[in-house]
Image (tube, rainbow, N blue to C red; front, side, top):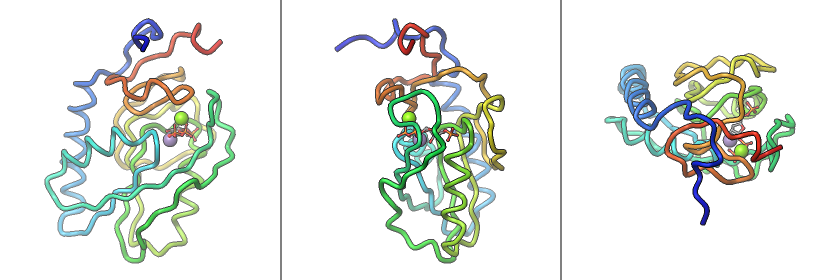
Length: 181
Ligand code: PRP
Ligand code: MN
Ligand code: MG
């Protein structure tokens, strides 16, 4: 198989920076949810890496569940059309829910997801996102636990894909235009 590095222009967030940031967020989450039964809801597929690493940083009991929603398909632009491909297995009644996402781009996915989960009787719903592109926002999302604000460029790695590839890159990097243009 082909090497990834030649498809990238610049590493934006390194593996080490991600690790340090998730440790910092985990300390806040532990403190904020002390004594509560926290449910982490990962948004497939992009959030797989963040979920795996954040969950392992937490020293308190948590449960994990997954939703698969997709708005991007194979392209680079959000269509705003969100589909549930896999719903939660967990009843949210009375639960403290923390949605775990890799990135807030336009905000349309999380805006839709918050609306969808809001009617399920959770005790609280908050968001943890590793990345956010402030200049790409179409809707404002209230994110309680944020890793990094990044410029409005097409980034891949650490769960983020272009056409389902690059998710296994350990850093977050800018995809070279020659790859998608
Ligand atoms: C990506 C990313 C976020 C969402 C952010 O998911 O993982 O979930 O887009 O974009 P938005 O803020 O503009 O809605 P995608 O739909 O590509 O599915 P994936 O996680 O399976 O890659
Ligand atoms: Mn996603
Ligand atoms: Mg994607």
